Length: 86
View 1 (cartoon, rainbow, N blue to C red):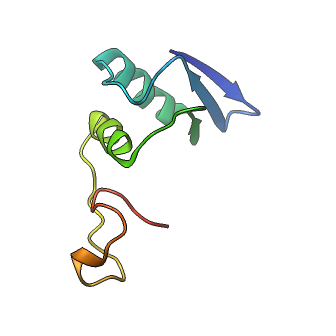
View 2 (cartoon, one colour; view 1 turned 45 degrees about the horizontal axis):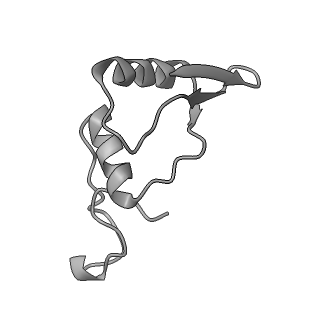
């Protein structure tokens, strides 16, 4: 995986990683370090399903569930509780 700064210290692109596959501890550490350094990380050309997105996010740490929403019934949600619809 390679971290490529974009612009002036605010954004970086991470290349050489497939977010659809499980990531190892070394990649998790690199992503955490990149989030400490840059405000925005760009992962280009990642055709993720909702399930891929949730699995990737869980690999980085505990997901904060989206329990505060305008829909009162869970069967009316468009997305799973692990995702926010903004």
